[in-house]
Structure formats: structure tokens, C-alpha cells
Image: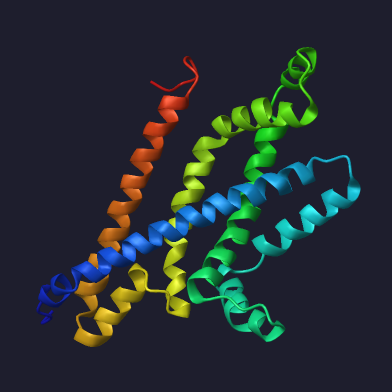
Length: 224
């Protein structure tokens, strides 16, 4: 093997990679926040007694989960403007990632909701709470705590999916790595460093979220 490694070009542009990492994290945070709201509404629709809501929720989940996310990104950015629905690069990517995460989070939240004890609702009714207040103050907070591990995994997966934003020239980490690669021809070095940044970031996110889970855990449920 005669390849000579030279990371100088990558280090000179390391600030661009860090800038792209910051944008990627911001995209994931905003998208999962919107996705949580959407996923929660769809989850309640899935367990609703209203057949129409169940059908609509099921169609949304089935359609989104069976469509590759890259296809959704390209559809929203290139096809929707033809109908007059205009969004910028970052906005269209957040929109896509939000509806994509919402479909997966809806299943997470549905599982969390159906696993709750009926006694929670009965206790709320017993102290005079309305159905809305029972959901707001009892059911949703308890459900969120129970599904936090799955929510954490979804966030990490969503952060890695932000690399696809490079397909529509959103300047995140993969976009800048590709730019450095094209301009310097240091293919192996560029993608080695980019991969290392993703790995370190994912491990850091996982450690932070696990710490948060332990703080919210109910004593005696396996968290030490």
C-alpha cells in the first residue's frame, strides 16, 4: 500500500466540520421536538375509539415508515414547491425529519400509553380531574418517563439521519466533509475524521441521555 496519509488539509478545515456538527445537532433537536408533538397526537389517534382517527393515524405511520427518508427529503424539497409549498433548505429538511420521526415516535408513545395502568385514569377521576387534565398531568408525564430509553435511541438515530441533509446542500457535517474531500482529494483522511466525529458525538449523546434517564428513574426499577 503506497498511500501516504496527510491530515493537514482536514485539520485546516476542522472548524467547518465542527460548524456542521453543531447544525446537525440543532436539526435533530428541533425535529425530534416537533416529532414528539406529532407522534403524541398520532399515538392518541391510534388508541382512540374513533375509527376515522385510527385509520388516518395508521395510514400516516404506514406511509412514512415504508418510504425511504431520502425519497421524502427529495420530494419535500423538489416536488412540493411545484404545488406552491415553498420552504428553504433547512426548513424543508426539518419538516421532513419531523414527520419522519413522528411516525416512529407514534409507535413508541402508543406502546407506552397502552402499557399504563387503568388505575391512573381512575385516580385522576376520583380527585376531580377532567380527561384533559388527566392526560396532561398524569398520563403523558408517566408515559414519557417510561419510554425515555426508546426516545433516546430515536434521537441518536435521528442525529445520524441528519447526514442526509447533504443531499439538498444543507451545510451540516457530511456536507462539509464532502466539500473538503472534493477540494483536497484527501478521501480517506476526510471520511475517517468525519466518521470519528459522528462516533464521538453519538457516544456523548448516549451518555448524556442515560444520565438523564437515571435521574428520572423510579427507585427499584433497575437503574443504579
